[in-house]
Length: 201
Image 1 (cartoon, one colour):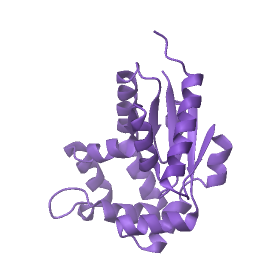
Image 2: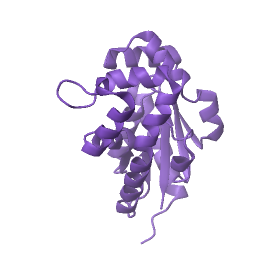
Image 3: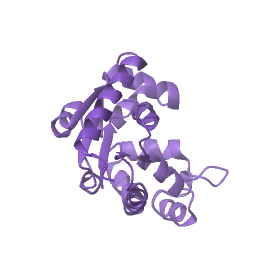
């Protein structure tokens, strides 16, 4: 299977980069989207409430994601507890989608903590890391999520640094310029990946 990991810190622009790969007819497997879908399952909600209490649910009975995000980035043990609830289920879904995309030139597996989690990294033959200036990332996340600056910084500090991701990446994308520049970088990497992983008829 030709699987290319796509990772980067919060606010680095993973979703935007994924859209450019989609324009090249490349399937995207989004681990965050899978986690979001899994969070609607009754069994998952019950497991989360057993750890975090009823504050983890909103008035509508759905997960209070903003509250959970604040909790797990302030309490490392709770973060690990939440990861244990989701981790195995997300991996299984990723593997299933990889199999479904077996005929593609390659498949992008987009995971924020790709390099921090060996099970995700092991699925990938190549890795793309996205870098962006930290201040720019902080502002992006604050604008889109309404989180306080200190909360965004706490999330960044709980992830690998750009330098750590750079050491393990096969390809780097710099997302602190124009969208046109970003698109050209994706075009170039797509060409290289197609040479590395030619489709056999």
